[in-house]
Image (spheres, rainbow, N blue to C red):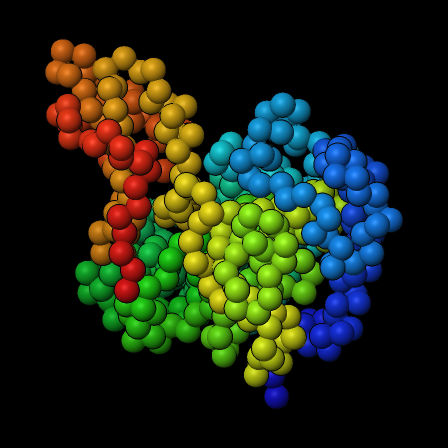
Length: 417
């Protein structure tokens, strides 16, 4: 007999779930129109009255708002660009994600909806979980923390880094679970084994929930060899959980309490089973009026029944990006972030950011073409880049002519197994 975190909702018959979501959409679109000036302007410009949106099927009448547009709207009308649907003082937290982009957190428990995902991955009341996701500025640490507490788990708010201290905590506290990116879990394991540990004898850590970066087969096999079972998830800083694996591992179940559509990247029209398109999200919450938010990520829907019993459609996985942004160590890097730092810097004739992968770790290298007599201050430039991108970078000054004139500003040269 299978267990579910919210079985009545997660196993609701498809027709009943569709009816429930339609009612939610009617309420939250009307609320957004009334309380979020940006959504009112978008709908009025498209000639869409809130009463015309009777359910999920009508959402295509509302234009898509993409992340780049949201950033510009926030700049023009700070801090939330007119998308906040509540009084600011009633929110729980505010974050500043790379872009930069302000993200609000509403006050209801498990606002980001990750408890469904963590439960599907085997986390239960009484687990002690080391949360290595970042708590500083960006919301991922709190996303997992809130969900784990909702499930009755004890949380170690470790954040990333300081590997040997993390291992001390894992062993001495008897940590049973891990949340964070897969590459850092591998870093912990490798360091422990360098220190002479036998993972299954020295630790109780047997479950993990992994997100925010690619998860190649070699890592999956490495974790299983050490007795670690895992689930994985997909989401964004703006929208929280948008998909998670179940025991069947046949794609990512869409949470029941958010509307996720896969749409044609040109027309914005929803696509059917198996057709690749952009992931577009409508939040079912009054806090943030994101109606038809374009993530820029590509996927396809699997609408066939899943043997696990959950009735929501599944995303088949991450199939790439619509635009030019690239995810590095769980953070999106945008060409415009590079331009904001490097354009018009004396001594920088041309530049290119190159993403590579060394073992299980992403590396971001910024190549700078410069004449010797006008070479920029690389220390100051690296600090400025890291402050903007929120990632450690390698900075390399190269000879003039090294970077081709037609080279893209941000090149992803990683290969995946």
